[in-house]
Image 1 (cartoon, helix red, strand yellow):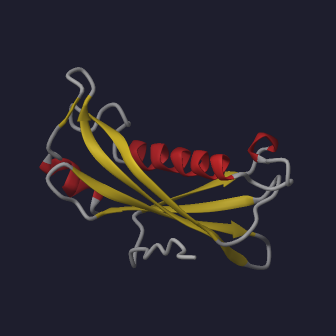
Image 2: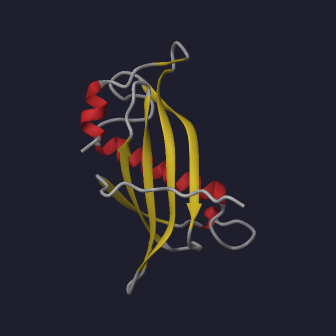
Image 3: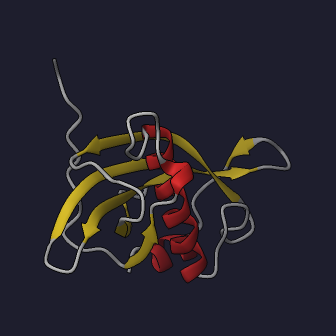
Length: 143
């Protein structure tokens, strides 16, 4: 069976620490795949806010997720601290990719818990159509 392989960028322009909540756990007692996606959603919002943006306002328009890929590497449990590093790359006319590196942080080691990528499109929510990525977005998020 083919597996998803995510090739992360060499550098990340932003990182945040999150703590696994009890509501993130599934019946197996670890973070479920839906919660994993929610964790990267939170990291994406913090990343955008760091640059003065939101998902509804990047230079006057919003962004919308076109695709998502996750590569699970290590189980996460209640109370775990996760460092999520974020970078935006692969800009084209209508969108870009956001990459995420999730690392479980303990007092004595750091373990890769997962990798993820979301394909984001610039979107005019009022007119329900895709729009071009503003140059200012490329300049800010590429750094």
